[in-house]
Length: 284
Image 1 (cartoon, rainbow, N blue to C red):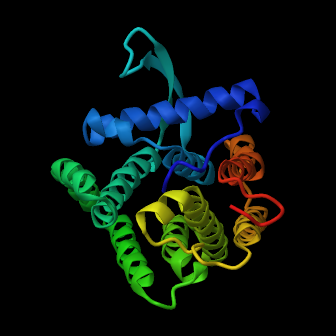
Image 2 (cartoon, rainbow, N blue to C red; image 1 turned 45 degrees about the vertical axis):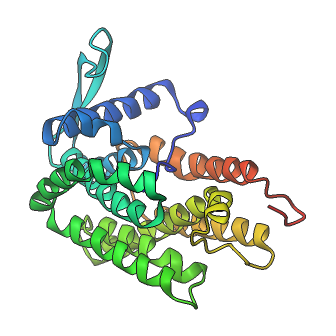
Image 3 (cartoon, helix red, strand yellow; image 1 turned 30 degrees about the vertical axis):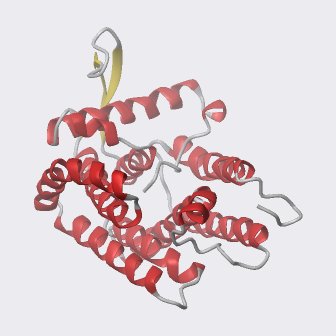
């Protein structure tokens, strides 16, 4: 995941924003405990959302505690306390996804970036190996995603649906793991698929100009009516996510999760499309 699953801060209540920050800081602290101080630099909004969603689904937030920020000891933070492994699982997913993104970057980058990536790869691999032992299924799903992604992008017939499916399938399977019965598993699968599809497409839109210049794969290159294709597919992915999300009953952190899905993701879509200068005439 790439940092697109964000809150719309201006639309959150103060207490909701403080709770969001406490989960973010709690996940940061968990990553430092489980992997290393340096691993905190790969902390993402996406995995923070994953942690919040898990704690809401399981009702496993056991309160908040005050402490010193690990980056700025002069600053005091609120940390979310977690009665199960939601923060630990989110920390593991963070390092696993970061490792496989690093592997993908080696394939797609130029000589000097590949050299830099190879220098840090042993550190990421050590984190990933530790996370794999704790959560082998998460690692298996991420590894399968990378293999499927590479195979899809090498196919001459690869279109947007084929290109987006590996990320969507991976996240749908990750979410489905948390279901307590068949109905909940189906709902979570659908939420994950919509989110995963959105993440892949918004990242492809965000990287479009860079991919054109570097000759990298991008599903929108040579696509007819590219601008409308981008907007329509992003909107469809959000609609799929919301439709499934409306079927699940959450209590804890519901205001935050509503904010992300109903306000944060649409705002990210607007900002990225505007950044890429997608207009109603269909030019990019």
